[in-house]
Length: 441
Ligand SMILES: [Zn+2]
Image 1: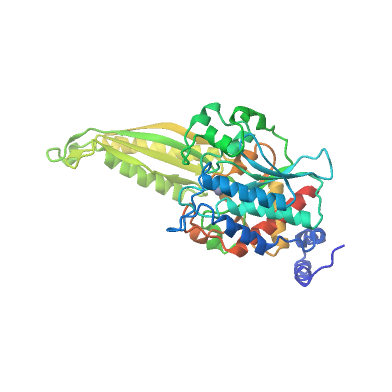
Image 2: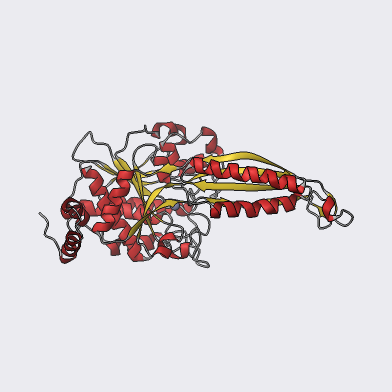
């Protein structure tokens, strides 16, 4: 039986005075979980140690490209931490580093949690490592407290997240054998890289798991945006990972002499494209919701100072948690593009070339994360993830949940990426409590 500390007592009293039901209040202070906390100092020390691997001394940027020597060294370091945490460590055929511990119930499905430790070139030490090292720390604390969960646990460090989520996509059978010969930023192909870290590209299909084969998946990650910081909120409860659609857009006009063609006789494809760029920005901004639209690449032909652009090629990307919202925004843009075309004597053509489906997190897990944060007296809010994560793949195997902690100034994939040590600890504590709560579900 757990004795309430002063903080928990204050939470209970305040809630009682506010007329909250007793059951909700008890869940909120996490009575059964007592003072269960990670060792924050140890967690931040491991984060710092990992940050010395692959660091560019000149810039402070992290270069732990998947399947590079630095990645290998970092994986060995984390494997050592997993062993210290009392986990059984292995590398699966897809190159995922997996630390496991059995549960009290032999037949129970595993609770899987983790993230990645590879980086983009000149990246930071928080995108990935915060969640991966917090996962190891959570397993370690559970072991030290002698807490054996009903469900087996699997701490996952996914392979090649930044280069295409190879490890997590292999778990859902989505890595096409043709992908294995694609080069990665390390210089090795994906297949060579998987073999380098101890996997076996020939047996990749054997790591595939079936939907319903996990109890839950949980990932702690830095937000990589500025919503939490600007809202001064400590914990983000991720509603899902947004879907993405991308189009190649061609505007056909007519190339002609820039000196002899009067303004009212022009069919300038770049003028039409410019209007569209502004339109896409305005529609995404003014439509209620959190969708985003971007024109990130544009080129004009023939591309000379004295020729009216006859053809323009550009990209259009739209993201939202609901695929149907993406489609609605697109249809509106296409209709208005036709009007721009009539007005400028040009024609727009759209070719869809990329789709990534939205992955929603599980409502019960969102609530469990919220209750864990409340029990720790941490402020929290729900938000979508605009970036892709391994949780997107894992959501196909069972209920998935994601916890965000603030990123300083919303910067990531940069040497300036930073998450405060106390925020790292807050996120890890929420992860720990959520896992214990999920185990009881
Ligand atoms: Zn990441």
